[in-house]
Image (cartoon, rainbow, N blue to C red; front, side, top):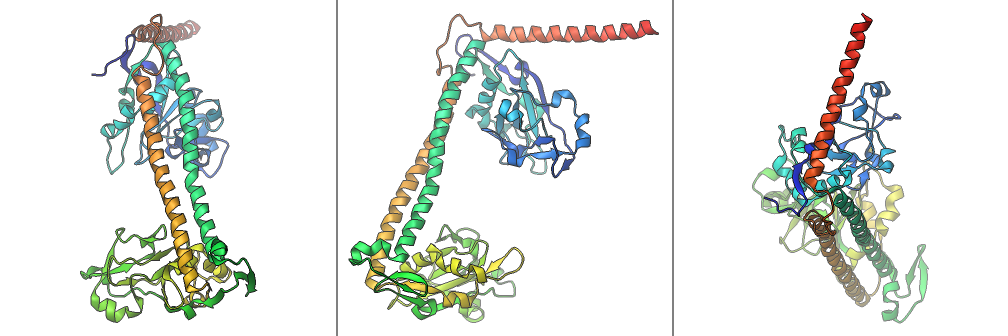
Length: 473
């Protein structure tokens, strides 16, 4: 049983709400003046406008007035794996975006005596969100938060003045958390640009100017390269440049032992064979797909996209590999070319940028030909400088990886901080209590009385209308 602060009361959403109802299933059109909120548009920060859908104008008059959103409404996603349980609070800014919701979203409209944002923060609370999985029901893999489940969702109710104090404090503190989170979320993009800048400096010679002791450059084939560097075709500095092939006759269901790589096995410029691993037999590998044989240390690049330019160095997870036709391998001739330097050259992306105007493919697809790969130019420093470039890039990338790891940990702490702050708020520990505040149970009594009075007035009004009709007869 939940321990409550003095003056608080344990209740549920039905007891403190005037209206809890799912939206309707509208007939959609591509665009109209009548936007409708679907579960994809409901985000914790509000309604995401680009995900709104639109109702056919003929349907608008068929929606009763209670279904129109008002300031203070809470929109709670009630279906959908990955979206169920997410909610947003409707303020004036959100109200300008849409007026109604579809049948996958529940409107929770609290009584005017209850601070609706207080209820919204309780829906965001880890206890409520953690219980969503236990509340789901449905069929055909469709998870559902029913109207009854929403109504019976428990909420610890603080006295009315304390609700206001809690909401004001949460608004202030969570805004600060959001600012920190936004700054942390922006760091990966900065690190991505940093890595790309390091690669650009590496393959242009800027990175090793000081090491080289020379900042002189010469124009070769419309490219500026340092003195002492040359531009060579990939086929001249590689032992092999070859695309793979896909063997026929159901090759992946024959208990093979040789790993077969596809484009989706190149993730973040690394090999990820744990994702959907496939194997071919040794016979297929050695005889039917001999040209597709690859070895640890080979540099791979996908040539069918989008996207193009996914690059990886083959690991020694297996002694030999096989490749499909969407991947080209570059096997460096180590007399001229360090394979890690070649990897960085391909990661930098000039090869792809240079051939993009001439790429071909079917609708929605672009291809780099094997000839284009073989004829692509590789900036070639002396082998000693290549090794220095690899050392420097590895050091810079290691630093970026360390920062990225720290950012991920910080993001987790910030996410946990939001949950901790909410937990503290609803334990009554975020703001001070005031013994002069009206207890929450008295507030519930006032809400119940107001409902009874409203019901009596409605009955009297209907009776009055009926009497007038009888008199008229």
